[in-house]
Length: 388
Image (tube, rainbow, N blue to C red; front, side, top):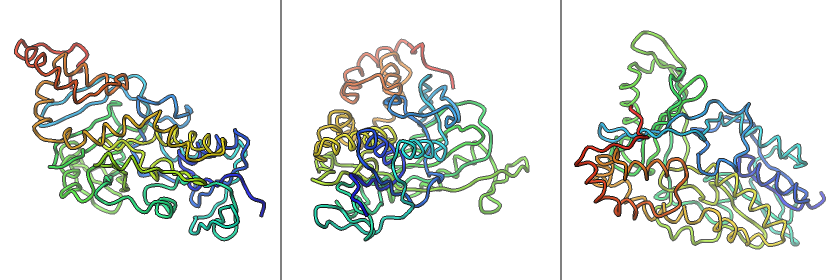
């Protein structure tokens, strides 16, 4: 077979974005994905920050966020938002995949099981050949293991939950903190005709599933009556499909020092570990990272990807990995939520939530603390705080 310029392994947002960008830069491109389209184990929230990178058409958008709330120990802080979107991941992924195919990427419907460097090219599955490889097949994918080895379990989030077949009454994205000891949260995401609910905690944290079931009982009392079925206390049975996955969540910022590229390869998205360690969001970095990887390869030097991704989002990654343990400490949570309604603290939270803040959030929280205590003493509340 003729040698392609680049083989992209994995057709999710990172891979599809990389393939489309590569073709647009004049590179002949193979796009390997053995199971497309598919429903992804993902909340499907396009973040407020970086949403301009996401390329989400109207037909893939299930709803638009009206607010994002954070709850801890009976206190709830609700931030109104206008830019956030919720997508159905199978529709959105398929759209991105089709865009890459329409641009000229050749779809190879195979699972990649073999990579071998031979005569200056990569031989894929013993049959296909390419000068460069972009690995975009996920945290547990073949390319991650082949080029760098697996991400250690202690640097992973376990994420799982249910698609609950009840139509949301409000497009509020909810994060529930402190449900169990540990670093992570429960979530409730509204979709067009159902809720996406789940947990996201450091892998191995005890009690994750039990905490999620307690939340379900509080919000929608009922019981599981069969696989994929949930009976409400009213007697109504609704669909309740289970999902699960692993997400990179580095507890040590030094892990981001390790290059995720070489002279003929690049890893992007979850395969590169490019996910915010605090909350596990990575769709924006996947879409942008794929494009940056293709750019580096088009310029003839895949290792330039290190320069590009660090320019765009390394600061966020390092700060999140450095702050992760401190953010989830009970003392910080209790203090933050006790003062969260004050103008000093809620203003910072709102900017962070809306993607408008670029500074050091932890440092600025402590700098604002004396003012927040004074504002709390006089009962001052931020005017943007929405009643829950």
